[in-house]
Image (cartoon, rainbow, N blue to C red; front, side):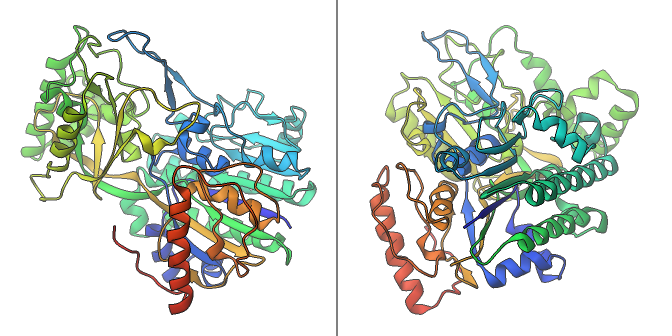
Length: 532
């Protein structure tokens, strides 16, 4: 029994389903007809590093230690400055490749994000996104690096800065990178022994952030990438035998955002965030006011063109949010007085905000803050800012649980967060439709013992993938996971003795098994999702 995990960063049914309806993606359509389909939820947070690590381990961030692109030093004393460091690898929890290696299974791991440096496995591992460069030692065994470049001389781990300078170079570089990724996948699957092949493609995320409208409009040059992805999927399906299984997964979904809410400016206005003497607040306010005035006069797009053409300093700050998405907001904070702040600018493209709260902020103030956030409404559209607010407990329990309280905010569709302060109006337009992450990702299961034509009536979670893969391979679960086996997608649902699920998981499993019985009684093609 072999298994393929075919990962696509940011793949969304909002893109897949319209393409399939037009007949553009025959292999994805085959998966849908001959396998099982479900929404794969990612929300704690819906961000690449945390989500792929959760998919790979079956655990929440408190167990594996990845919350963001950055990790933050603990504050040993209240009021002391906080430092940040780039995170390229998880801190704890066994990944699926560790578990299978211990079972004696052979693995091929290609370009899974946050896997640098590569680990010793029973097989081959090639680090993915967050690897410093191709000059680094990014393969295990190290000797495979030379073989990789002999087999695929133009192989790229990810796009480079120059690839993203304009739309045409971005499209060309993404397609070329994907072609080389497919060539490597073909080489490994055909030339090396394997029981698990786990590959991740990142091009969808790279294109959907700047080109969301073009993708939904199915412009020919943009759709070429998805047809290429479909062809790669077709090759994988050809490699499967009657005992093999395929899972297609994405770490999160996507949406188009046209409105932004300035979350740190909001916290500043509430007296919860204070800035130090290094903060350029007056300049930020002037920049925000200038941007607002230019938009009111219909001159903002002209100013942006002038900025690109002439590099005018007074306008240069207008596009700053596109350049510093992954730089944490820390050095401007007055740590002695601040009680709440959002350090990670990843949430602008990630479609979330993670508010760090000071330990001594009492429960009543936190409750009042949550109530006020829920009451925030877009003055233009009347849409509520918030879809959901979660507290620290959603990150799970484990050795890397966060010590300070947190509020994780997910916005309503069409809205994202901006973190730089300066816009006293709080609400603003994006310069154009901004593709941002959204919690509803993609799951397809296909192959041995998988139900055909199943449309899962309620979402499953990214933590469920590892237990389900182990079950599909006929292997026992070696430990307790935050996720569960997705019994409902299998033809045979006999449940062996398993470790007790974590954190109230028994109640969740009982509820879901009841829903499965109802689903089996009234049919498997339930298309609507229950409302919470």
